[in-house]
Amino acid sequence: MAYIEVRNESKIYGSGEQEVRANDNVNFTISKGELTVIVGASGAGKSTLLNILGGMDSPTKGQVIINGKDIANYSSRKMTTFRRRSIGFVFQFYNLIPNLTALENVELASQISPDALDVKKVMADVGLKQRMANFPAQLSGGEQQRVAIARAIAKNPELLLCDEPTGALDYQTGKSILTLLQNFSRQTKKNVIIVTHNGMIKSMADHVIEIGDGKVKQDILNSKPTPVEQIEW
Ligand SMILES: Nc1ncnc2c1ncn2[C@@H]1O[C@H](COP(=O)(O)OP(=O)(O)OP(=O)(O)O)[C@@H](O)[C@H]1O
Image 1 (cartoon, rainbow, N blue to C red):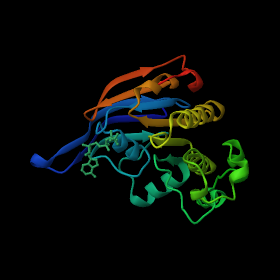
Image 2: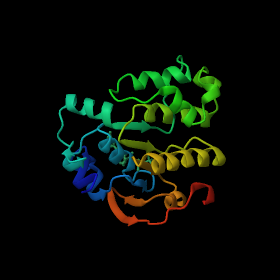
Image 3: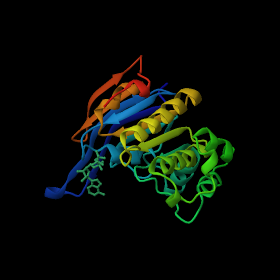
Image 4: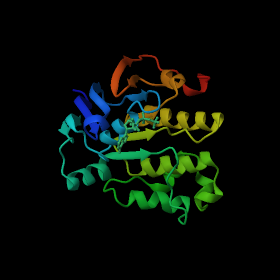
């Protein structure tokens, strides 16, 4: 059984001449444990799709079945519980709370999950053992993104959603963040979805879904993903 099943999903903003079909009859399935890259040009509809998968937004039409449950028509209360328990989100610009330390940022998120992991262990796992007491402004961009990943992972979500997680980072730092995400997916067998406009990183994934003009243009399974360290772009 598919872990994620998106069926005839559309997200339409506005109406008449102002209508924008951000997602236009999108269909795909994702299996349990896959590392998936959703790739497409700016404006293709990737963030819209990721926000819908993460319960931050609802589709105009269609079904979004995650782990056997259609979240498309969840009430806002059910959606809040779904987001808290099941989803970890990583954004391009980290979204850390500036007046909390790295450790406190991660602890805060773990407190809303009933199933949270040991925060200090997670921070050590992402390479932040020595930086826990620092405030975000005292950390490099790559370190801040590691805090954001630790924050998402510490909740122990079944699904980790990453929206352009390397978009604000230099090449080497971006590579180390993608390595971290690939290792996390391999070690935990949890589903990770990375949204990017960078087609060069497709080969790191088990599954690549290419989006253009709100539609699925290509849907490819990759039985031999490349370790991130071996990809050049
Ligand atoms: N709240 C909104 N109201 C109206 N139109 C929107 C809204 N959100 C997104 N759109 C439109 O939907 C389309 C898809 O946007 P989306 O942000 O999903 O694309 P994207 O592929 O993530 O782009 P980018 O890589 O630039 O972030 C765009 O044309 C965008 O302008």
